[in-house]
Image (cartoon, rainbow, N blue to C red; front, side):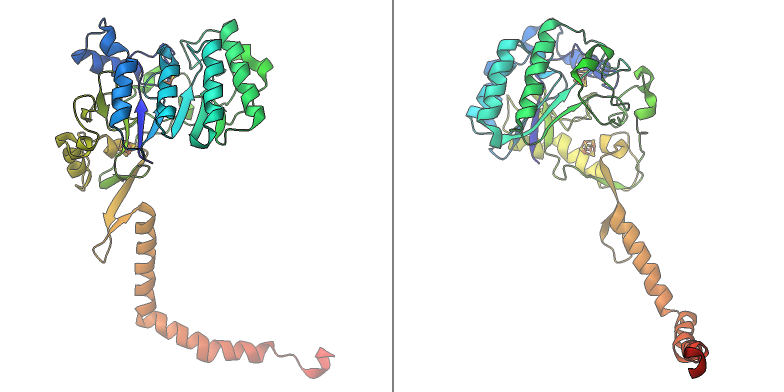
Length: 348
Ligand code: SF4
Ligand code: SF4
């Protein structure tokens, strides 16, 4: 669905091995001084300016390219988004969330539960992929409050996860007895240097699409990510800031979709060859298109089905196939019927 993910700060302190933080910092800091707090952290004032520009059908995701509560103003941002009538999703490690924050956040989530699309708590895993996480009494208190919230069963899509295929929690949290499924990562369309991952077995390979592509999850390219300086990037794969489609603080939301960067991307994606200029051409979430025999664009599954039907039509039309069908119907089937008829005596 149309979504704007909010990146509340640059330089996530959790440093998960499956996350291209180095690539993000490198690209962002080329244009933004890392010592400048105004561009390192999204201010509450700028957050409100962004929210006020968005159409109401856009979901606000507290996720982005950093732990949202690594910015101490995140609780007030959540309150503002909900008070403004938006649907919201929250993805958090609970890092930076104080006990007082947790009480407010949980009250807000319960009060607005019809507009909470997703609540996902990302926990540290047994293989140590969340490098920056340290256990603390306050973190555990906060986590316990969210475990209690889940037992109340008031938020529909509420899950816990790790970023690790084992699905096992960090050893220091085993007493919490939270059951989770395994998880499979990806290289974020080739943005991540996979040498940094602790458990590579759980990572899908980077595809290389030589065909035309579209986005399977967001066909209108409208699940975007905003950075603290207002720049909006294509999607959550774009940690290298390859496709900055505009700036929401200086322009309108609609401008993002008619920008030069967006048009370039669409044009590259509709060209049936690989290109390094488009992230989508290396993305696990892309749908590859080919032209069917009747000159229509077909997605992967449609293309396979169309090819099958095409060959089936040709087989049905072949004289040998038709002769075989006639032989079966007019000669072999009657013979089988005669051969299978048992004499009356035997039948008794
Ligand atoms: S996966 Fe999330 S918590 Fe981990 S480093 Fe990336 S943004 Fe931070
Ligand atoms: S990079 Fe992947 S997720 Fe992002 S718009 Fe392209 S296909 Fe979709």
